[in-house]
Length: 254
Image (cartoon, rainbow, N blue to C red):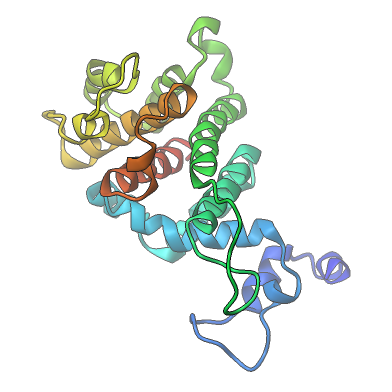
């Protein structure tokens, strides 16, 4: 495969995609990614297959930016991972999160005695979102324009939001509600408060503001708390938060 890539000038991704099934069923031949199980490709595929489920929590902006359609999402993901190494780490944590949420015994019919820690992977997804944004700022030459004391997630979001074309009005609403995500205390309805914010924005920008807030909340929660762990394991609110992280990264890294 290495020689084939050298001789043809194609990347490994090209052949992994070419020699895979066109559907979810089983064929008589083995997919190349099964024969050569490159984890980076499995991480990528799992994200492309699964992210649209979470993006349904933000339907207007997903539709406007064509994030729910698999071909468009694949192109966007491949574009981002070419220039953002931290994004690859996020994809790996995203796949591990879903692997830990699944019952996967080593052998068919066997018992699974592993100690699953899905929230650890959830936390890595949240933390890697922040490093993705910082790396993006470095790439486009904007990091140095942010004062050192503001080089944290909210500061990265504000700078990249302007760069990505988010309106000043939407940025103002984000600033207004930013305290909801800081979690200096332990409000039991932390996620519900973000889901119920009111703005005068068009629906797609309203959803982007909610996604940014959800991402901040996730980062601050996993850094300082554990009181919502039961809710973040399996709930609609958890899907909203994870969808917010996914949307934030896809929106601000392009």
